[in-house]
Image (tube, rainbow, N blue to C red; front, side, top):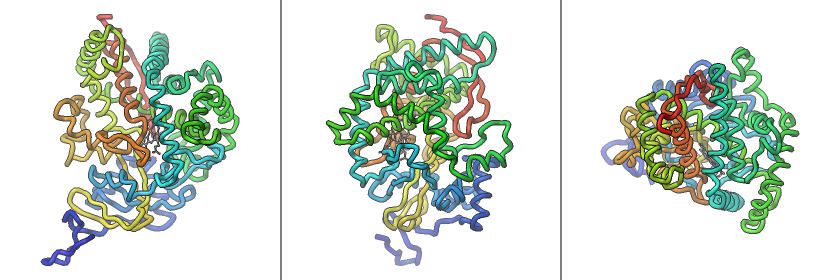
Length: 487
Ligand code: HEM
C-alpha cells in the first residue's frame, strides 16, 4: 500500500505522510526498564514520563519501556502513541488485538476471577466477547430506570455524612466515597446494597481484591513507606491472590443471590454459563464500574475546586433552573437541559481520564500516522496509548492544558470526536464488535448527576486537592460547604 515518491527516495503512507523510523529506544536490558519504572512512578510521574519521551525524541510516536517493567512484566517494550491522531489506531479492531492486555505489559492471575478471563481481557475475535458484551448492554438497558434513584440514595447519605463530619474538621472525600460508589453501583445493577447485606466492610473487601490485580500499576501505598520499599512491595512480584480469597467469596455469595434474575437472563438470552456470567457480573460491577466511578468522582471534584466559585454559581443556576422546569426533581429530561454541566464533566474526562492507558497488539504489520509523520509497526508489537496526553493535543484543543468549562458547549461539540476516555471517540457508540466501554452513556449520566446533586445542595464548597492516592486518584479533602440559599 505504500508508494514511493518519484522525486525522492522518501517512502510515503497512503495519505501522503513521510514514513520514518519510530524514534526512541529501550536502553540497556534489565537496567533501563527498572530505571524507567522508577521515573514513571516516583521521579517524574506518569505525565512527566511520557512528556519527557516526546520532548527528547521530538515525536508523539515513540519507542519506550512501560511500567511496571521487568520481574512482573513479560516484556516492557512498547510503541507509545501520544497525540490525538495516532492514538486512534487503538480503536480499530481490524488492526489491533486486545487479548489479555487491558493492564498492559502484565496480566493478573486468573485465580482472582475464579479461573475465567473477564470480558475486558477478551479480544473481539473471541465468540465469548460478543455474548458478554450483549449481556452488558442488556444489564445497562434493563436497569437504566434505577440509575437516578439509586445514585441519589447513595450520594445523599454520603453528603449528609460529610456535613456531619465537617463540624469537627476537614473531611476526606475518597475514603467515604469508596463505600458510596460500591453501594450505588450494586444497587443500580442488582437492586441490593452491599453495605447492608455484607456489612460495612463490603467496599474494603473489593478494595483488597482490586489492589491484588492493580498493584503493579499503583504507587505510594502510604506516605509512611519510603519509595524503594514501596517499589519492592508493589512492582517486583505479584502479590498472592489467596490474600483476597475470603473477600472474593463474600462477593460471590452476594452477587449469586442479588444477581439471580440477571444470571438467569445471561443463561437464557445470551447462552452464558452461570460460572462465566457470575464472575463477569462481579467484575463488571466491582472493577469496571465501581473502581472507575470512585476515581471519576474525585476527578470531577478536583476540577470543580480548581475552577472555583464563579463556575459553581453558573452551574447552580443552570442545574436549579433545569430541575425547576422538571417539577423540582432530577430527571433524564432535566439533565438533558444542563449543557454547561455536561461540558464540565467531559472537560474533566478529557484532562484526567480515569483509565489513563490503553494497549493493543498489532495484528499485522501496520502504518501509524501522527499529524505529520507515519511510522511502521511490526505484527505483534505492543502499542500503548496514554490518554491524558492524547487529549491535551494542542493541534486539536486550544489551550489544551487548561480546564475550560464551556469547551464542549455549542460549536465546541465538534471536538467531542477527540474525547477518548471510553476507549473510542465520544461521538461513537459502543458495539459488540469493538472494545469501547459499553457504559459510555451511563458514565456521562452519572457525572452529570454528581455535579447536579452537589449544586442542588450547595451554592459553593471549599475543598483541597492533596496529592494522589496510590498514584491513581486525586485525594480530595472537603473544608466547608455553603448550603443552597434558595432551597
Ligand atoms: C468512569 C467510569 C468508566 C470509565 C472511565 C470506563 C472506561 C473504560 C475503558 C477505557 C475501557 C476500555 C479498556 C480497554 O480495552 O483498554 C472500558 C471497557 C469496558 N467497560 Fe468501562 N468505564 C467506566 C464505567 C463502566 C461501567 C459503569 C461499566 C458497567 C457495565 C463498564 C464496563 C466496561 C466493560 C464491560 C468494558 C469492556 C468492553 C469490551 O470488552 O468490549 N465500564 N471502560
